[in-house]
Image 1 (tube, rainbow, N blue to C red):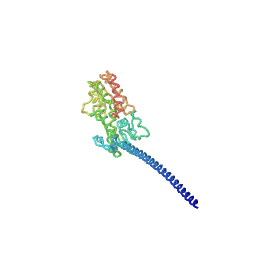
Image 2 (cartoon, helix red, strand yellow; image 1 turned 90 degrees about the vertical axis):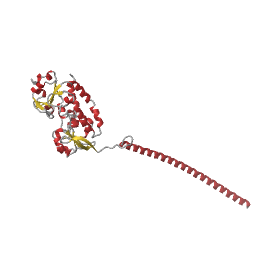
Image 3 (cartoon, helix red, strand yellow; image 1 turned 45 degrees about the vertical axis):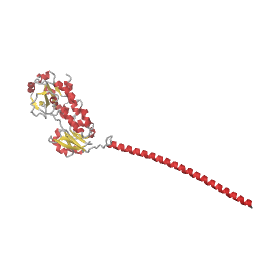
Image 4 (tube, one colour; image 1 turned 30 degrees about the horizontal axis):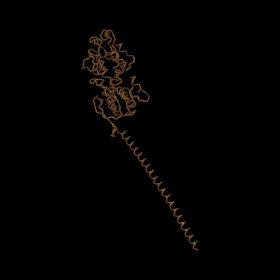
Length: 371
């Protein structure tokens, strides 16, 4: 009996021992799981930290890009104006302050000098309508995609209105239409100031137009060579007299220093002996007899063929009109100093443009600097 009791006690003790061992293994496994979980949590935390840094970098890059898009490198905002105020002329030819849209997207052109400047500045793609022109260097604007607005002397107001311009450019020939055109859009009217000089007028007008697009810095580069070219021609002109004239309808009209071709005497420096300084010759000059030319006997005669400029059908060429028996007796003819301006349409219709100025100077250089 005693042996049976001992056997039961031993069996019970062994069972308890085995149960204790089993409990210890379970605790170890749970501990390992807990450690693994901690490791995983730490790993997740590290990943989240890494993602957080990436998000921070993206946000930072985005902020930098936005700052760059809206301002300079320092992050200061650079505001683009909706409008700018420029000095223009009104219908009476008086200087006025004019507010126009900044960077206009739709431009109507009724002045070839202004179209020339816009083209040189690289914003000609904004032109939605233009007056007709025969000027070769502006033929890219005469097409079916750009509305024909009439001529530089007579605007088609309905066509101008239909093309819905943000701004309209005109020259002096349309001054009388200034008010009517202003009912459609702001009208920029620029002109050549003969007292200021053609070169300076072009520079000033180009700067005005450039200010509509923030392109003022481009103007000096475009104008860079003109002063030196004028100076080279001035050296040839020094000490010489000239008559500057316009041939139209078989007549010879003398020009002063107050209008067309004034650059020849005012800036290049020929002494104009064709007219009294106080006589108005700014439109088509004043008709002069051939006897007058012989009497004045200038060193040079400069000739603008108006009929060729406006393509008058059946008109005599300027050379046919001028080189008659009387004029052939002058010193200018005998010395080969009658200069026919070979680009009359440019001189007559587009004097204030950048490309026009280049062509006009070439007309003079090709004759005067090759002597």
